[in-house]
Length: 505
Image (tube, rainbow, N blue to C red; front, side, top):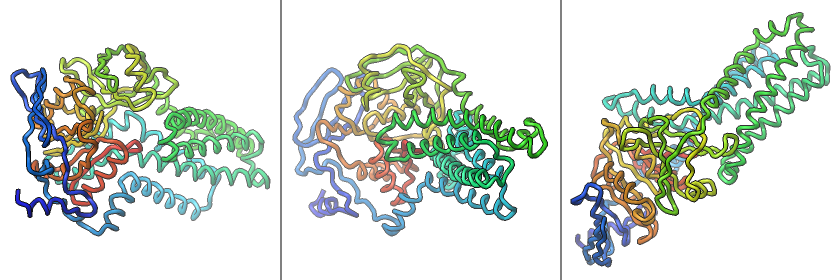
């Protein structure tokens, strides 16, 4: 490389570094045994070392530039437009906004024909129903099956939009907040009617009490789900969301009965007739069924833990098989915190595994205790991995245990060709030979950055280089929240299809 070329690489574009100083990029290549690898660390200054499974080859160089990376292009549009399009108006927020626009239209229709007390409760219940169904395993699986039935031969625009389906959380939260807004309107109307005695439908203090109890619970759910609070106090969020949600449904059934009893005397109809004519009654049945049915499959299942290191454990399950892109939820206690993990099939073809890394008290206890029995509910549910099957060529960018969900592609005969870029600390020591075997199976030329040797590095330049070299259609980022958002934004701003699952997707 000429001095002029090196100078070009060293110049930052849009504040992003164009060189990776002393980055240890590990390329996995097979040697004599299919269970072993030769790791070529192209890093100036390291000495040749050998071990049973690895040999480290280093080529001395005259520059600290390990990789001749192409310069990052400027963003296709202005910085302001890119920020608006890819940071602010994300698919999640667009779905949230669409829900609100539809509710505003519905509100206008109700006002135009003269509002009724039942209109508010029907609208609130409709939003609660859609919010609940948006998190129902049956609905989620059906959605992914429909969206991902689009063939790879379909136009890119169609596949690009369908692959964003994993942001369905925007529907869940949008309808949840809209339901609370409708219910506030219902509460205000009920209160005014009760104080003025303007409605014969609200005659008893019991009705007003139930109305306010439900309102308090709904507000508690929304406040607890606020992103910053949810991120800092996830267990509190989960308990509030679950138990307050159950209480809302219980009290709502009580409200329907009390409300119906108040109305039957004024409208001269039986309780049954009143409820049958009320859409909220039928939607409440659907809400209740959506809550109950995942718990009908609650089971304590057998697990075979495979200790890897003080940082990671691999859990083996044999109660069912798993498909590409699916994951499960497990817990030590059915009424305590539940944790979701992406699964990948075991090589035996019987059962599947989950990779659990140390990221908190629960996972640390799992690694230390090595549980042999845990609770599971519902059935394996599709996630973003299923949508990635629509592309011809993929780049996988992962950090730490983010490599685990990618193994979901392993046993699929029609998986797209892919390149893997994985940044983690001491990969062999932390995740073991078995996990490296799986990485090799996914991509025989996988690149691994060992952060114990080099520290953490900006993965954007190398990702951009791989996109060009491999002519990939899309990039999948599986990392922490901050890194995923940044990488996805920087790639999308440069015209690259990038997908990154977030905790609020």
